[in-house]
Image (cartoon, rainbow, N blue to C red; front, side, top):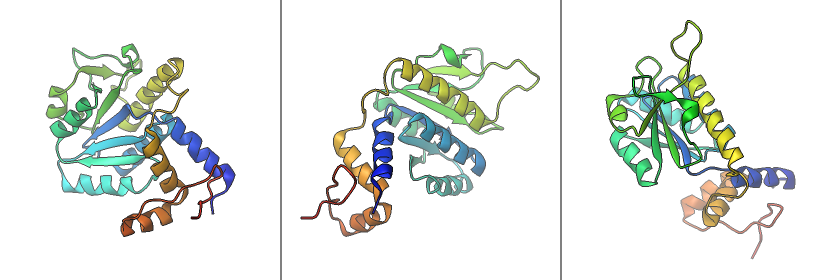
Length: 217
């Protein structure tokens, strides 16, 4: 049985989620980077992030990362173009972290509108397919000798700027998840083992009261 305090905390977490803000990890392969980006996404209220790989080894690492954090959904894709198109179909602008002649300071972007941020692998950057699909290129200014940040650090820096702008715009003030999805997700997070068993049986989740207790028929 979940405690009322923990149930309240999960409800608040879901009330702050930003379904129109996400990250697409384009062949990000190092386990510590995958985990760090997922943690940053959770911290700024991202509900679902995405990953694409062109290598089976990378994909296996992404699958492992998907199971490492129950608070954030990680969707895996086989194709960069299809992944970006699915995000564009949701009305998101596509920002690719890539320093080129067309790139702008990451702070000069409006993150209050639906946004997907594409982060490439640390050594190689975003793939050509990701670059070809960008609406805007963004970069993090450097004042030292290093030319770039670790990919997970860069993702965190960009995400917390997005959080700052969204806080100022009041986008965390009202729940943005659909009520039916929120009820489903609330049960899954409050009762993870039971939800998996019920899902395998093909049954609907039971109702919960305001303290997280299961309402018996």
